[in-house]
Image 1 (cartoon, helix red, strand yellow):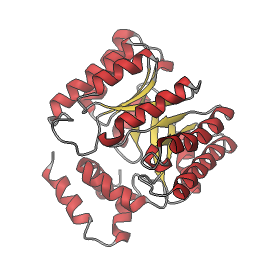
Image 2 (image 1 turned 90 degrees about the vertical axis):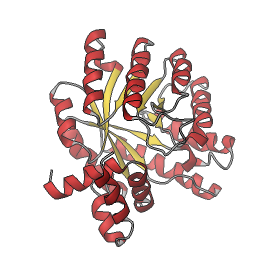
Image 3 (image 1 turned 60 degrees about the horizontal axis):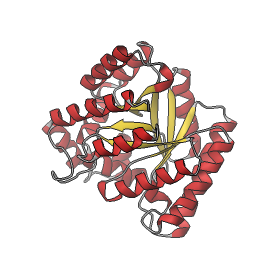
Length: 300
């Protein structure tokens, strides 16, 4: 890890909120749904797909959780009315996972029903390891209930992920595979960059060979090259995979993937909870702060 990135993160936390916002808005669409609409339109014009995320997680009241369902449904309706090439990503703790699992299932069910009626897709995002089992359990409940318009996320740095993928392959799940950003103990997660990369490639191979649809979520040049090799080796059709990247990060790599003829989806977060989200993301993954800082300094 570049020590400069850690310095950037430490420095940001003592600056005024307005200064942090200059960093944050490099990879957040804005505070309002209109901002998400604008950003996704721009991405679509560049032949990129999107997934929209309404910021906010770990809610503590049922009222907040129900409001999160309303906000997610509003996004799905906005996508439809504006004919955007985008789906929706959600985090279950925003819908009451830590309050009551059945209550969370009901809240997310409203979103799933709306998405299905509009012919859209909902990605259930992954959070820290304390909710991994519960998140996969909710996903499996929706699949058993006949919702095929949903997918889930697996984090390659977790030691349990190989076993999780074996179960997901049996369901022919749609899986976004990412490295993982939450700070976890070594007993739970791989720590070394190379071993995380090796596990990522191994898990990607399992998903491809198992017939799953996969979102290859990475900003790592080495992993992109490894994915290219795997896709070419297996002659994988484009309906079986797509690359995925965060909004505002690695424009050079993003553009290259599209130029190489691959489908690419950009994760577009928005909402009033941008500050807490931004500081947490910078702490968990200082490399993102480094990318954003470089972008501000170079204008690229």
